[in-house]
Image (cartoon, rainbow, N blue to C red; front, side, top):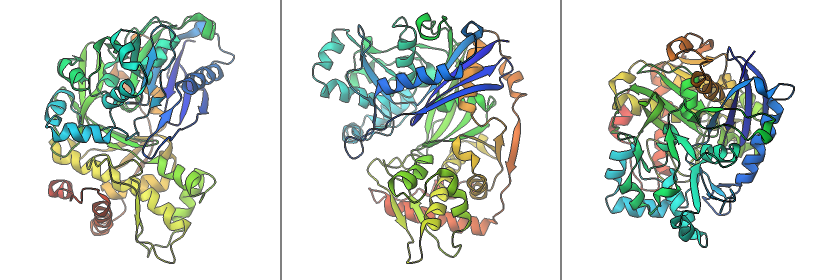
Length: 505
């Protein structure tokens, strides 16, 4: 029996999952790590906390298993989060700046006002927003004493979390990333498949800092044998949302998945066609195999599961996330409470970095039940925002069935709410940890242990389909209330475009 080890390094926790050669989960280790919020809108991680959590969870997953039987490691990671470290010591010069961080909003606004966004979007498929890595790297170079001089001298390296882990796992032998993570930095040209000189100049980032870009199933070196008692090949890498797309077997154009974790991220496979969005969605690389990229439209929601964490840790309305469904079911149906979770701004299709969270429709009778319902419904409404924008952008999005994964999919109530708002089926697979599954599959594909994508798609198995129950009038009335709440929350006082509002109705 051969095994595949998937390292799933997420925003709030790290998970390591051991799969057998038939891609059945056999063991798992998971560990949360600290979140740091030095200032309003700032979000950081200690890279050493991340590294230690990776080692601990891998050791748990490998307990009792001969590491020589592990055919390969696959890595998937929180995207856009970036680390700058010393080439010689491997030590970070500053905390990892997390994808949620908004400290560079003014820098991005200034570049946008100067007319740079059209060039950025043309090259990267992204919008000029602090969500992506480029402005975070620039901030570290400009705000950490001596960092820029050291970078120019070739003494510092930079990368998303996958690159940092590859560097550490290989004992500093390999500085690499894959095309999906590179495509999220706002420095990578998704047409030419290379770091872009003009973008590097825009953010004043030395090219020598950057990793080599590889396919998702490729040679990323071998682990230092001192770590696990054996040198294990690293052969698969993809950003978390792209890994979930692979794990959901969304290999055909028109297939769509949505992952509900800290945030919510929907990817629609558009195949070899790079679709330009008219509704402020992102064009990104879904995966790259044998040097050939497959593209996707992506909608990014910054807060999904994080709103449940906020009710638990911030307001202390619940002790555990499992309480949410019972509260939502018991909420007063006559109350129409809307929670817009713009804690760090709003993502697609609004892209308003300055908006902040708000609650509308409060009455004297509003309590924890109604707030829990509003929190879960915000996920359904935001998913509809994305689906409608995708349908407006690309005819191939027509009658898409949504495949879902991630922690929030355990809530039947939430998934039913999503189906009700979309007016379309929602499919939950047997294996909902599809991010780790996708990473394991990519690693197994590279070493010949796993079948072709077409054959792998036959393995995907449905656990439950949620069919919409709400009639169109009820669904649209509730959504109109959400749109009104968002409109009141936008910092610019802007309105939701008619094209997005009408698409899919």
